[in-house]
Image 1 (tube, rainbow, N blue to C red):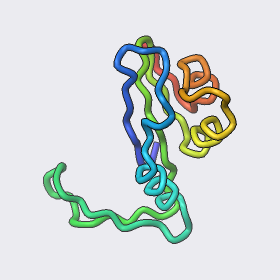
Image 2: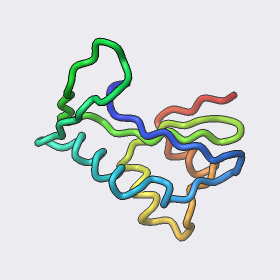
Image 3: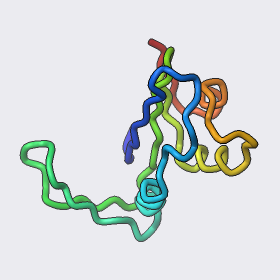
Image 4: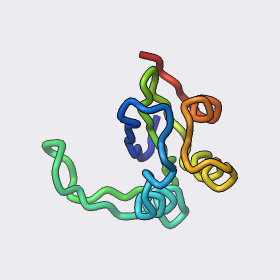
Amino acid sequence: MPGTFELKHTRGKDALPFRSVERDQVAFGLLAGSRDGILVRVSAGTVGASDYIGLVRYASWIVISYPRFFCVIALDGFLMERDRSPRKSLTSERAEAIATVVVRY
């Protein structure tokens, strides 16, 4: 599953506030998925990794850990839910409905 992954945890709750995915994280994900892309400086992590990585037309995913499962949601789907929902948070039930992947514990 290629792409960028933003990891979030509900800390035992049944919902994740939409604001938990910050504006800069959304902007980064949208740029990674764009035709122009984004150049990323690799500052620490994997031994032998390049200094920079170019991400062009890569999928961006929000990965949310709920008490009974975790789910992988496309950034576009997350943003659509955020913008259309009357709620201020993404419940586990809605997350499961819009997720691309769901893994139960």
